[in-house]
Amino acid sequence: MIKNNLRLYFIMGSVNAQCAPFEVLELALQGGITCFQLREKGVSSLQGRDKYLFAEKCMKLCKKYNVPFIINDDVDLAIALQADGVHIGQEDETASLAREKIGKDKILGVSVHTIEEAALAQKAGADYVGIGPVYATSTKEDARIPAGTTMIKQVASQYPNLPIVGIGGLTEKNLVPVLKAGGSGVALISAIASSQNPRSQAKVLREKIEEILKKERTPSEHP
Image 1 (spheres, one colour):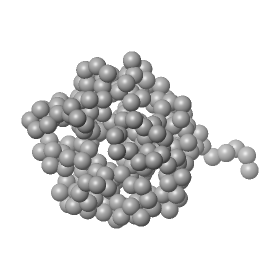
Image 2 (cartoon, rainbow, N blue to C red):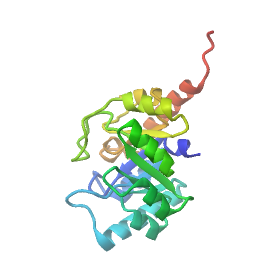
Image 3 (spheres, rainbow, N blue to C red):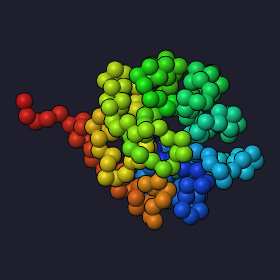
Image 4 (cartoon, rainbow, N blue to C red):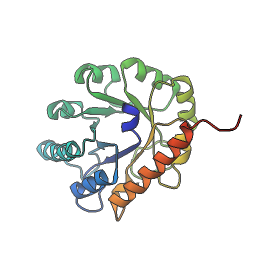
C-alpha cells in the first residue's frame, strides 16, 4: 500500500550528503526509511553516464532493503533503469504524459501547491502528491514561500483517497502537524542527509512517525 511507503520518505542527491552518499543511503535504509527518491540536481550534480551509474547503485541498495526507489524529474532515466517510479513537479512534463510513459505499474508522484493541481494529478493517475514547502528550506534553491499545513489539510479533506507526503524544512521537532493535517508521511532531505548518524536519525524519525500515526488512527475512548 503506497501510504505505508510514504511514512518516512528520504530524498537525496550526491550533493546533499555530508559524507559518501551510498553510505548515507545505506545507513538511512538500515534506520527504517520507507521510500527513497534520488534528486540529482544542483551546480555540482552528476550528469549523463555518471548520473546513470550513481542512480543504478542507489537502486540496487534500495532493492536490498525492499524499499521503493523513485527518480525525481528524469522520466527517461527511470524507464531506462526500470526504477519503481518517478516524481515530477509542476515545471516538469505533465503528469498524464509521465503516466503514459512509465505505465500503470510504476509509482507516480506529483508536487502540487493548489487544490486544482491536486485534482489534475489525481485525474492523471498520480499515486500520491507532495505538498510543500511546509516550512522554510535551504535545500531547494527555487523553493516557494512556506505554506504550513493548510494545503495538506484541504487536499486531505477534499481528496481522502489521494495519499499526501509533506515536504520542506521538516525535522523530528516539527513533523507532527503534517501527520495531524492528513499527511501519510513526511519527506526529508537535510534531516537525514546532513545528520552525523543517518541510521540513528532515521530510526528516531520512523519511531516518532509510527507513534503519531498510531494515535491518529486509534479511535478516542471518550464519547
